[in-house]
Length: 154
Image 1 (tube, rainbow, N blue to C red):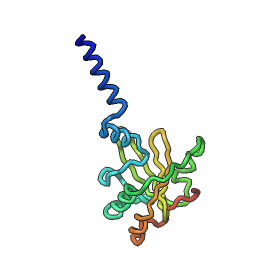
Image 2: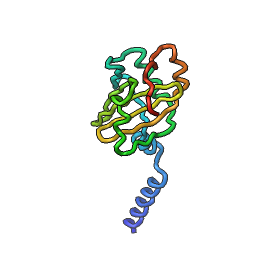
Image 3: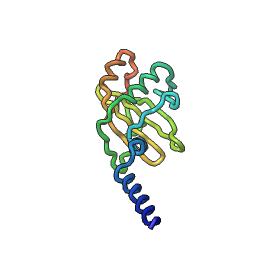
Image 4: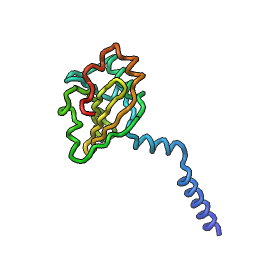
């Protein structure tokens, strides 16, 4: 009788956890599988036109990236991955490198007036998406960190 009650109690707790998980678990899962993850300024290297960028410009680019709103994912069809890489563009993107655990992640930022186009490359995947960055663009426009980093074919 006690084994039956214990089993029913544990089964009830398990069903409750599966049907409505705690908010911390949900937040962890959403953060783990998010396309647009926030980056930390101290953990990245930012390169523009083969020059390492440090200081205030690096801080502004990271802030703009973190505060931008996700708009849409750009579908990359098999065989067209190479079209999104920087060596096929006429413009120079901001190149961000960082590591999450064992994964090395590379971001290519193409900054336009209203949009921020991001090409995210890991070892096996290439993901492209657009974000809204109009407010950040207006704030930092006079600093000329946006010159010549627009994507050409989108």
